[in-house]
Image (cartoon, rainbow, N blue to C red; front, side, top):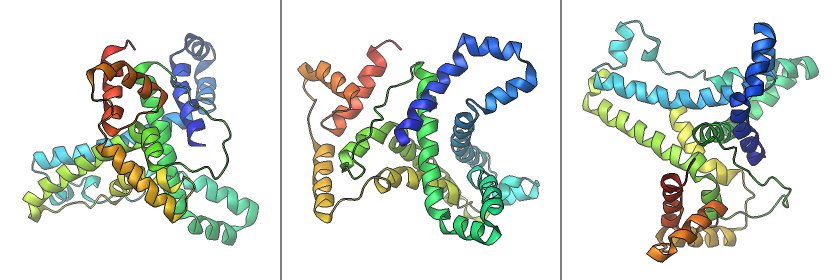
Length: 280
């Protein structure tokens, strides 16, 4: 399901850049262009904007701290940045679903269903949002809509932690570490001037934690023996020395394209070699 969204959202960049799309929007007028937008790429573009807003939010507060502005100073200036933003875009998009369920099943059933599935739906939204946003970013930077195999494997097919990392390291894990590092910078700056206060940034914290754990949570859970086996394999993957030889460079690049890397070093090296040696 995640790979299907990744494939389509990556392809939406090609739709935006296409000459046919440009000519259609020129000839059908503003109102029809809006309808065309909302029935084509609007869903994917809104997910990308939500994702970008998380980084901008944290970076903005880092700049505030460097400028000597804490929540108290922002409050004195009458800025809405002085308080935590709890109502995010993800919660706002829940309103249409609630209205639909009220019309179909009644208010009591709608409230019970929404509250009962709020936690799981929130984590799924964060996971899926990152899939879509990362694919659109990659498509915009490379101009290529990457192919994903979206066949129908067995529903309970086991994915090892190594397989999950290789699949999601660019889309989820690397952005999670970057956002977590930015949050750490903000926390350190705020700790130096404790009297000016600090925002907890609950939604930011939930986001980068969710990016790390949801690929594992939404994979079929194995038995405890397989979890221990995954831990050992992932430990060997991190500490492995495969791909360190100079004569293995071509093989490393090929393995990176196929997603069959043998170590964490090989995973990163294949990405950097592809980025710097191959034309876009």
